[in-house]
Length: 283
Image 1 (cartoon, rainbow, N blue to C red):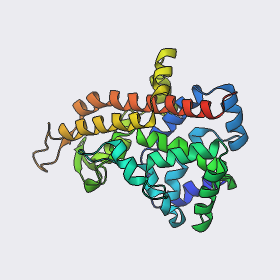
Image 2: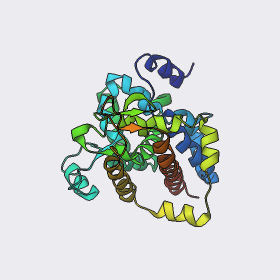
Image 3: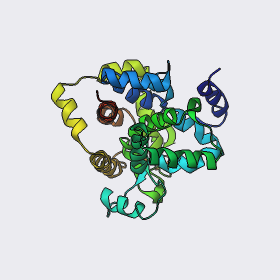
Image 4: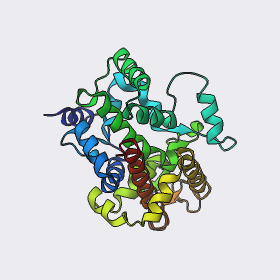
């Protein structure tokens, strides 16, 4: 049994793996847009394991206290009166990896073979006695990169810390009680009743011009897009209210209006992730 299977079995007792299929969709779309040289290098790192198989590993290891230091890598906090650049300047004041944008940059440097970045990551892992994916620093960095690029495209992962990115905001979604973060992480996607490969196939409609434009966008633009969508989510939350609970009541209309947004963000994340990996492993 490989390390991923072990982690799934142990972590399943503690967590409902939120967002698992969304991350797999991003990874699958990325695989379809990789260059031959990127595919070859990724195979050298991962062996027979697909990106869709390892993309949720960074969520699975949240169950291990040794990996608690990486919790903040799954999101970034940007308040309405701040910009992405404001937060980056704040985080840059210390040498720690504080959020998703810094984590993405670190993982990119490691995969490029940067010795200082690799040593930094190895030191954190060893100091916390955390275990690497497949006993490989590069495999670990690749799994985190694939995962976090997906995270930053989810609007509630570029959140406000006073409600923990919507985790404190309860809503009714098809008559069941959730928080708005989990609705966007999981519920909208799962309501479509599709496998991740079916979902990815249905939304993987691109043109060369579209791919080029998306891959030209800087990471800060990905976060700005999420902030704009996040504010739309907050502003429309109480358009429909459940009379009994007084909570926002999200149902068929909400699913109809927002599944297209989710599809767009998953597609954008997959294409942009492929762009990063193609650039790292260009011929």
